[in-house]
Image 1 (cartoon, each protein chain N blue to C red):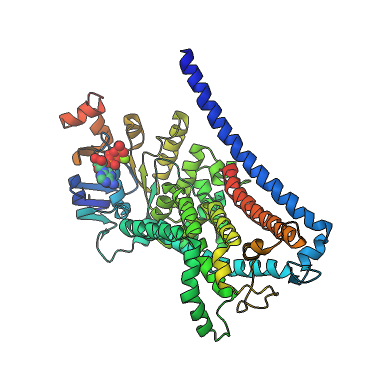
Image 2 (image 1 turned 90 degrees about the vertical axis):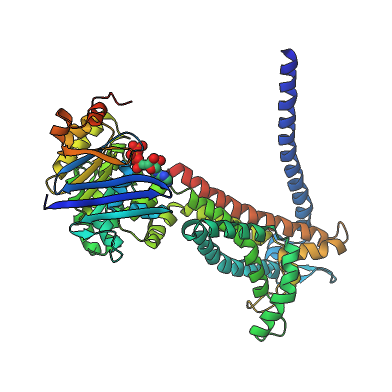
Length: 252
Length: 292
Ligand SMILES: Nc1ncnc2c1ncn2[C@@H]1O[C@H](COP(=O)(O)OP(=O)(O)OP(=O)(O)O)[C@@H](O)[C@H]1O
Ligand SMILES: [Mg+2]
């Protein structure tokens, strides 16, 4: 895969003495949805947080190997973290809009990155909200606190604020696990829509969700990448016994 | 079975009684304060008392205007607030958001230690170190001035401000910070734009309670502000606060005299001021609960 958006090369990750990722090699294609699946504690979140260096906030971690995003090793000392995190956005398990108005939630990114003048904010807010399908519902209440929105709306808003800073990779760590089935389905629809322009990596415990939205899937177990390939192939003809056991629910 | 119920009943009754007792005590103190204080106004008008420029309680006839004392308290409190609020807020931000684990623990212990120093000790230390320094640095005839009192009281308000504000910062959900950092915000941007606004009501309460502590403080100010009951024209002049007046004069006054009642009336004024401050702090804390 010559045009991989994210390339992970022989990645080892340690929390103190505990090794959470073992020699992971993975290439994530551009403008597709890649699902990361595996049992609890296998290192999915850890891997995802390597892509925007959020693990830097945890003390006592150590990392070996390379993570290359758009041809640049992001663990190289000269990397600008602000720039990296602007490009690689993250959506969390629990929707976490800021305790500001809806408008200010979206304007936050552009204003901290100084890439637009205040006059352009309304336009950016409108564009971002339209992209996540919130504009029609919220256009008359942009000054309301974001915390008054429903869970699904909050999660959409969290996605919208990433679009506002022109992120092009979206990392989603179980983005629907705090939502009901209908909201989940609608967020999945949004993801399929966003795939046309963005590279999405999603961690999920929901096999159906992985099967529904992703085009590629990676199965992890105890910090190791067991199998990686097209979702359809992985779910219908898994190469490894462990993968088959997990996706058919025989894992135990 | 009935033994156990009896036992329960006794425990409940005891708890109830002690709860009621504390309310009754507070009420009694309040009534006593009002009864003694309001007696003054049989002799002196309220306006004359609050805005009179002269406090000569033992002249004949006594002049009982507390404007110099109110202004003395205000100057000292204002100065202490100006010093302690920015310092306290900065200190709380450093402890709560920036300092690494071990340093955080050390600083927290330090702040607690500062809170544990009795005010008389702080006053004493201020008298022998701060007062001569103020005199020298500003070239004054005496170092016993409002500014000395303000600096000393700032030390007393700091621990209150820092510890309450740190609690407020701790209460800000981690998700807010993570969300902001993950968008590429720097730590300072995150603190300023997200953390501080979401902790704002707690911060206001911290400041209010710190000010409340300053207004009510007595011993330290009595020792280092010079105690001149004249209307203070600057921070570099001696002042006398309301608290210091009560403490200094209560022992020498004749019970039932106008002077005696006047001291109680000052108590009412102090009570009213601290009550309002605490009310504002409560309001700030409570307002938050309604919104979220
Ligand atoms: N801050 C940390 N310090 C120490 N160990 C950690 C830390 N965070 C995670 N771990 C450990 O690393 C391993 C991988 O954690 P991670 O959160 O990446 O798993 P996960 O696959 O996302 O699990 P889940 O599905 O439950 O979210 C786990 O064994 C976990 O206990
Ligand atoms: Mg996880």
